[in-house]
Image (cartoon, rainbow, N blue to C red; front, top):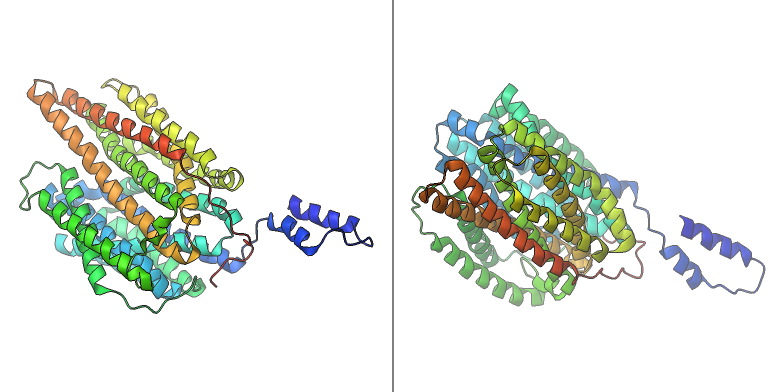
Length: 510
């Protein structure tokens, strides 16, 4: 606002004199002021934020409910884990296709399909008479969830002027951070009062209301394409991404039960499918018919941001799985206490989102990434000091520091990475970011859980008690996560803030 006022004062000073300042000069002053978003655009983004909050909340409330579900439905852990693994697998299969869907299907229609699938899946889960129907309901839920995050990111990048993207992405991080953080707490409360079906009945009304409001308020965003979908690419995507996530999830389960499928087989299928998928996209993108356009990787900033995002997700999700095991199996805390202990960090990450977004708009990406990755690394190195007698406050401080560091990192990577690609590729960039998160998250869980299991087994064989062997396995897992985080610091110095377009006043694609 101050910039605009200065321009007006300067113009007033020259009124009546020779025209010493032309229109271009005035434009130079005004362009520095962030363009305002229309009320319609704000409504569209608001609806998408609420909808994304609902689907992300649903994703995390299941983790606490699994033991109760397995008892009520009389299934063993090896079967019950598919309620989570199947959800993750469906997400990995659907997300790579969303880049094409966002360009091909009008925004209102795609939003309606996504939230309808989620609502139908939630209703089916609430009424499920047994495990098979509940598992099918989770697949349907995941199909809707997979569309929401890329749709939200693409819409923000299209509607929001470049000068304000950091602030809006910061608001997005509230949704991305707070929903998973409060999920376990909400789940615990609902389970104690309404049972596991109550979780779905609680989420369903919110989903239906957002669906009704969203379909009414939504507008078509971005340029639409009429290119037909390439079915061969869809099949290769399912084999490639689905195979890799299935293999990684199988390693991370560590259930001890012998697997019918050899461990190497999903990786072999996934690897071959992924290579074939990439080669086909390279050919199809020459005529703008790619299912997932890989020309986004021509941007060095986007490529580096994707790689750093993957590294952060490996350490984050791996640590998120390991930390509750440490709190409950080593420090002997109750699940409710564990959930409450981790809640402040998630809330803090969400509250910092808008602040970090404004800092990004002012200082750029590197000024936030470097201190953010340093803080993440320092907090992870502190976990190597954890013992079976560590005080709870030490764990709380670690989690708070980790959350602050991640708030700086994720908001910066989302904003800077997507801003570095051409506007017509926003939908594909969003899909690649979301796919990267799924693959890296599964890899992080698989890696750290495998390290924990192997080290614990070795110590147990050597005569250590259960608590000692678990503590030793957790120590190794945390150590590896800390080492990986150092690579993130080096990567932060390589990423530059993408230049802003010359004219950022008019968002494209209404």
